[in-house]
Length: 161
Image 1 (cartoon, rainbow, N blue to C red):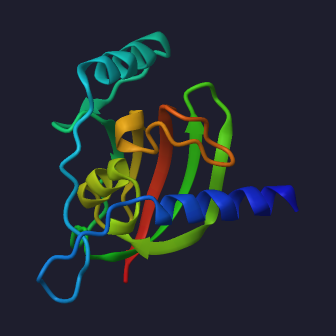
Image 2: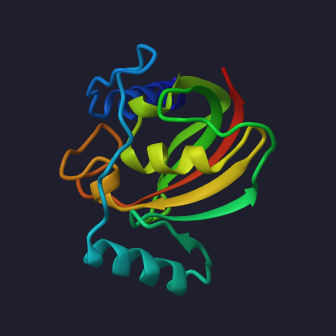
Image 3: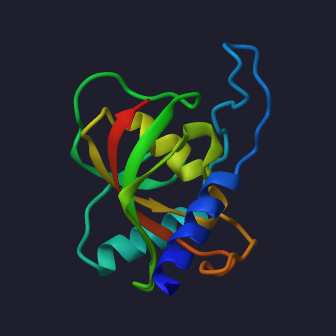
């Protein structure tokens, strides 16, 4: 029962965490994120990757990623509704989310790191992302994620709906 509560809490947090500034296209109420990681956050992630023998590409906004399968078809936008399967960890290794059954949401409704990462994939695509606090929950703690946490997600984009 605790596992399901943890998954539900993490899903609600991810979905409810973003700015919803209206834009004038097709009724979509989201705009692409312009948040960028600080130099200190980037250095912290680089150190984490090196220490753990991992390689990843740095996005211009400052999160890091590794695409193991790009998928095929069309890339989602900030206004797309997507179906994903994902697992989330703190850099300490604590698993705080395991949504392998699938979750549906609008790309613009999730944390900034996800907003930047999901459009890199097409349906069927798989990505591992390393997100700094400024592109996640920042100084806000959640039920399962401490304030100023660095997060790692394994995400499969199942479909664009």
